[in-house]
Structure formats: C-alpha cells, structure tokens
Length: 193
Image (tube, rainbow, N blue to C red):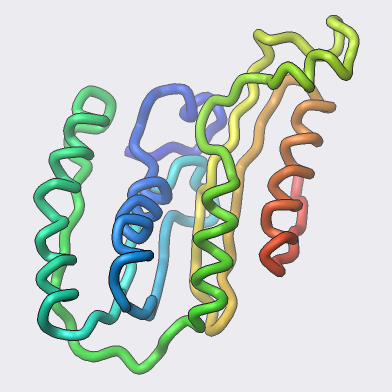
C-alpha cells in the first residue's frame, strides 16, 4: 500500500525500503555479490510501496543461498505485516548478466547510513526532553521519519527521507541527525520543505 502523507507512517504498513534493506543486510556480510541497480519508492512516497534491486551473484552456492532466502523472507513479511499489508511479498527472478555495477564503496556507504536512519514513528529521547523545557518538547509529540526513496544514478545513490514532527525543534534535530549519518559515510544532504 505504501503511503504519501505523514499520518500514513503510523498505520503499520510495510516499507519497501525496510524490506529491501532486510534482504540486502541478510546477505551483505556472508556472500560476495554486486549491486547492479536499486530503485525503491518514488519522489512523493512517504512509505515506499515498491522496490526493484538487481544483484549479481556468481552461480553456485551464493545463487542457491539467495534463492533459499525467498520463502523465509516472505514468511517473515507475512508474520510482520499480515494485518496492515496482507498482499506484500518478495519475488526473486533470474535475469541476464548486467553490465552496470554500483561501486562497492557506494553500496557499503548506503548500507551503513541506512542502518543509522530511524524508520516510522519515533519517540523523543530523554536527551530531547532534558535539553528543552516541557512546553517545547513533550513525550507525546508526533515524530515520524521514513526513507521514501532510494535510486541509483550511476555511481551515486539518491536517498530521500521524509521527516515530520509537530515540534519544529525536534524535527530539525532529527533532520540534523539524518544529515550527520549520511555525512559520516561521505554523503551530502539537501533539505526541502
């Protein structure tokens, strides 16, 4: 189903970004593979509803491992999202050899940054409430963040996040934290309101 508005973030829907990251993280450290292409979500997605990743694996053990992940991954998806998103699923298909490969450093940077970026409805930290007076930051503030889009553009990856909060200071702090996560892996950030 995905979503296009901040209020969709609190509905428990599956995010194609989270699912894509789960697939990639599940095989990232154990098998040699190249990321050829990644397209997750669209420009106006708050919650990405579709993803297509193309990974290149050598035939044999690695290829068989990737295929073996399909059933357990779909079982996990159904267990996690059967009520809010009963039709969500993952497919794996064999395709022709790909010529374009995203550089390993770029792929690693994306994985490291996405691990640091929070997803969904967030709770203010004790630090947030301790650093501000109670009228500015409350634990019942509505703070949401979601990666809505990932797109490969040659050796560059575009990652778009959607941040919403009814408290401007908290929202800016979240935006700054996300920018820092990407800066730490060599990325740049641009804020659009």
